[in-house]
Image 1 (cartoon, helix red, strand yellow):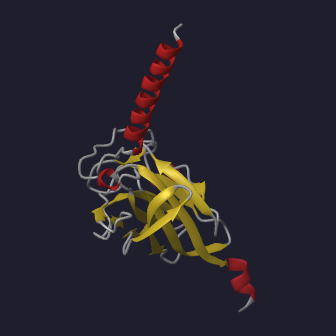
Image 2 (image 1 turned 135 degrees about the vertical axis):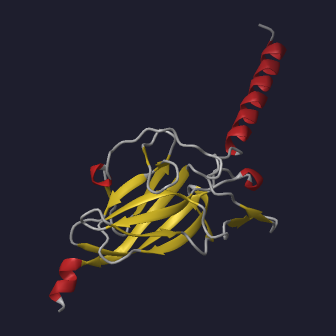
Image 3 (image 1 turned 45 degrees about the horizontal axis):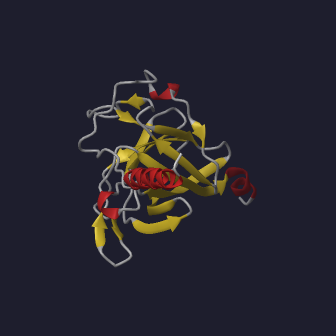
Length: 205
């Protein structure tokens, strides 16, 4: 094969791969106001959820995706969710959250702004909270919007679904321009659980 032709073909492939990479990095997730989750219920009731343990003090990274199960938590439509349980002997007081941007290209970026639904040991709902006062964050996984949510007393289980936030979902570009980050139905999140060890509390009484 002619060497010049080979190099030219390699250049064309490199340009194509670069373009595909840029398209991938500029992707957005579907918005909460537009997305209709497929009806793939996992359970008839909340007590049947598969609750993952949420380790205290450690950052727990996960995604909510189109393949996750759905549940109808209110009079609205079904939603994808992630379910967690508080470890035995631990009293949760707060959750630190990060909502990762879907893209480094801010005009196309979205983020899943979580709502938390809290339940006691009998799976009775104690409350629902949205992220507020979002702050810009950044780490190895990219840009994110962070917040802290209070956990109601008595919480043993919590469920995360996509919410709308409180209107503080903005992110600044390197040139200082402020970009709105629309609320997405899908995306990457991290949680860090804070609280107290129950046995330690009992020993101090």
